[in-house]
Amino acid sequence: MKTYQKQWPPVPSGWNDPGQGSGQTSRRAGGAKNPWVKQGCQLHIATYNARSIGNEERLTELQYELDRINWDILGISETRRRGEESIRLRSGHILFYKGREDNSLGGVGFLINKRISPNLQILKTISDRVIYITLKINSNITIKVVQIYAPTSSHEDEEIEVLYDEITQSLTENKTRYTLIIGDFNARIGEQCNSSQYVGQFGLGKRNERGTMLANFLEKEQLYIMNTFFKKRPHKKWTWASPDGITKNEIDYMLTPNKHIVQEVDVLNSFNTGSDHRLVRCRIVLNTKLERAKKFNSTQYRIDPDTIRDNKSIYSKRLTERLTKETTSSHESLDETNNRLVKELKETTTSLVSSKTKRIEKFTTQTKQLLERRRELIKDNKRNTVEYAELNKTARKMAKQDIRKYQENRIEELIQQNRGLNIFKKENAHKKEMIKLRDGQGNITEDRREILKVTEKFYTGLYESKIDNEYVRKANSDHKNRICNVGSEDLPEIEEEEIVKALNQLKNGKAAGDDIIYIRKVIQAT
Image (cartoon, one colour):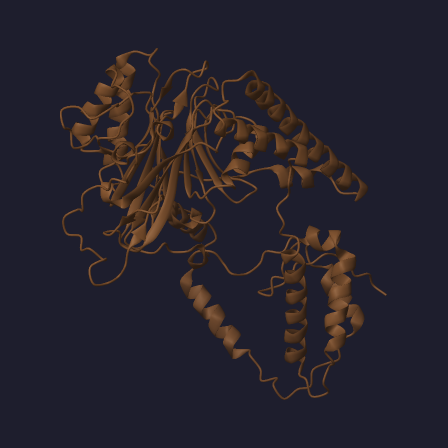
């Protein structure tokens, strides 16, 4: 029996071995140690030819499979979605894609995990075959990930040359410290030829004509094809299988000029959404820790008023229990009473929302069992059997029925609650995000931070006062002269009817201030 031992890339110049004297080591899959890996930020970046995420069922199935693995960025080939768009899914992940305008063939996209979405800086499309994103890890380190989908062997070589020119364009634009090019290259690079330093010793099969064109491109751009630098068993290398299951090739790759950051490249056999491709994932380590989303996002909860309304009996009971425990002191000031009430309202609301954060399951148990059975057939190398084909067809049919049943049940619930269908549309609509904007000088920017600056500048100018400055200063001066000292006067009594009237004058769903308490007109005048 042959034994397979991990083969690490050579230690880059300038790197110190943290294992010497420091005791720091890092471990790759299989138990082997790589002594020169520095501790820092880890990212799991994957690429997958999904063979379509054009409808809700396929997109939901893809997210269901992703929940089972570690991932941060997923590059997708053959999205089969028209146009260009960036949307935030109900799960919180960002889907960014580019497809053709006239048909649903081809297309590329990214699915960015919500954990790292605050680090997104630029989302850029070159064509319906090449797109890229850049992430700002910290003030010094940025990384660019390029997703591509190469033409198949039925296309002319000129189209391949155009693709490589577009990849070169993506490399020269918005330069970053680290770069990764991933996707379906539709080329067999095979085993190492002519001792090329950019192709490792562990490729699969023999190189074809398109593989030669890819090898020349690697030499030109000084890119390492990382799949070939890690020794794997043959059944752990192939990424595409023919319909008859006889031919299996390695055509999905990870390229980078910074090969020292790539710590592992794996082909995941258990991940499958019915495609004839397998997911390829790499683990990279950067010399810093990832800035977490809490540095960018507010720590406050955004409370949905509909959540309170749907659970008003539970909310009323919890709030009553809290308020009855606290007794109003005779020495308590008005501000102290207000702060206490606000605190109790916020804590009660937060506890209610926290208990409702369970993810909505659209697939039934039966459908999940079919998907699990499909994974078992793949593990048993029965991908090309009649049983697998029938099971895959049944699973997709059941998934479509489950989503339709979920939507029907939700609509029925809303009707019983006397609420409109706009609530259902809002719940199921993916939030679109702006990916480019034209500033006042006519220049188009794609940097997300620059987009915010342009937007801020526009609205600042839009609502800026046009009144003469001298007139404003005079008005402010007169206003100051009219201020009276009322600190010694007693506050008048506030009637209950006045409070009810004031609350009912507030707009629905709007917060009264920084207490983030949303108002509903549920108080009736007595």
